[in-house]
Image 1 (spheres, helix red, strand yellow):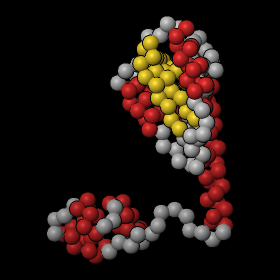
Image 2 (cartoon, one colour; image 1 turned 90 degrees about the horizontal axis):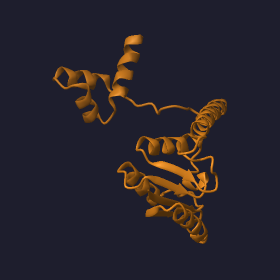
Image 3 (tube, helix red, strand yellow; image 1 turned 90 degrees about the vertical axis):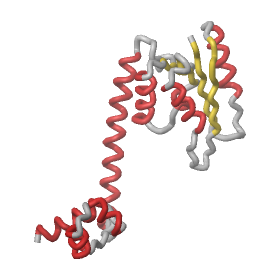
Image 4 (cartoon, one colour; image 1 turned 45 degrees about the vertical axis):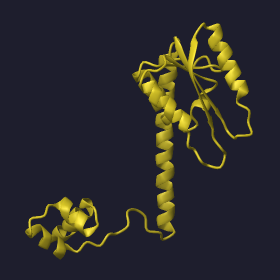
Length: 195
């Protein structure tokens, strides 16, 4: 079995050797060949670029390895349950197995796979609901503070729209020429009709 290792550390001061040593030893004990190692150093500054993670996902989609081994689930992704579930589902779709070294229940080959994914899917849905509720509460607070929320108002010269339309231009061409989107033109036309 061809194994790929993914390791992630929070800062360049942290030593990723411990993760790599454990994962290499585990692979050797399983009699598996390590074909790739991906190591991202992600700073705590808010920059979340993970070039090795992107490369790993691309090569997983190309089936360059059979199993992705990582130290812990939070080393694979800290983007929340929903995004992590998407990554694991993508790996499954590409027929690439995955396994957490320190959390044996996170194992796509284990008997608990379906249970774990069902729990993660449920947590992802709860996370989505929580995000939605926080967003709605923030909008209500902003409105109460007198702030305008939503899309900025775009002024559309309907006379110019009609002139260009009569010249034979379609909505896309008109929108491009006027520097607005098609939806802005359609909304402006709809408001006039509604009056």
